[in-house]
Image (cartoon, rainbow, N blue to C red):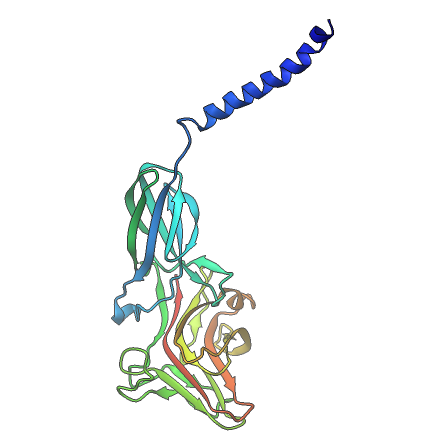
Amino acid sequence: MMFKKYLHILVFPFFLLLVLAQSSCEKFSGNQTIPAYLKIDSIRLTTNYATQGTALNAITDAWVYIDGQLIGAFQLPATFPVLQQGVHKLLVLPGVKKDGIAATIISYPFYQDTTKTINLIPAKTLNVGILSTVYSSKTKFIWKEDFDNAAITLDSTSAATIKIHQTPSNSPLTLEGYHSGIVELDTVGATFAAASHSTFAIPASSGAFLEMNFNMNASMAIGVKIYDASSSYITDVPIITLNPTNNKWKKIYIDLSTALTSYPGEQYFKVYFYFENTTGDQYQILLDNIKVLSF
């Protein structure tokens, strides 16, 4: 009797374990999803140099979508799993470091997305290799300066004691093309202060980015000068201070949008650059491929 009394206590846990075991077998037998893998080596930019300037870029990441669903943002080169299988539509957006900050990777709005049809096979890696992108057809090139023309569209301001000029022909300091821009400051008080020659209309809603290549042992400030509807100067709005690059050329994408909307109602802007030698050390600033983009 005592055995029968407690038999149900012993049987119930055993029955529960049996049910769970059966459920687990059903969950993982036959229907378990084995991922396929995608491999992307890099994303290459192609440009029409005459109208769009350099193709040099700093595309570091890929924002990956399959059938419109975001899979993730991946640092390139990348190999990553996806749970889909069979034929699907792949869409990849080029990613860059906004303001040069690794923690602020964005899908760059001025680069065109890349799409292709892919066939995913479980446990297999599909290598799509090097993808290609171009500037979006909606991109407006507000300002381009590659320092190859006789006239430089970067003017010294009243605060400047040193002007920017072109590197000599065939100089090893030149990044690409015939010339880069160079500034040399080797005395206390020597100041590089320059702004774009033209004023540009502040975009109503689409925002704007500054692209440029730079190589320097100085810490240079970049910002915008704000002007009203009559093109009268209002104020300077600093945006970023670039750090020395240790004798290496770097590419940066600087978001101008917040600065341009900080004074509602104003109409125009210029981009400015500033560095003052306060130590008497020898400083060199090299610039190239300046672009201001909007839609």
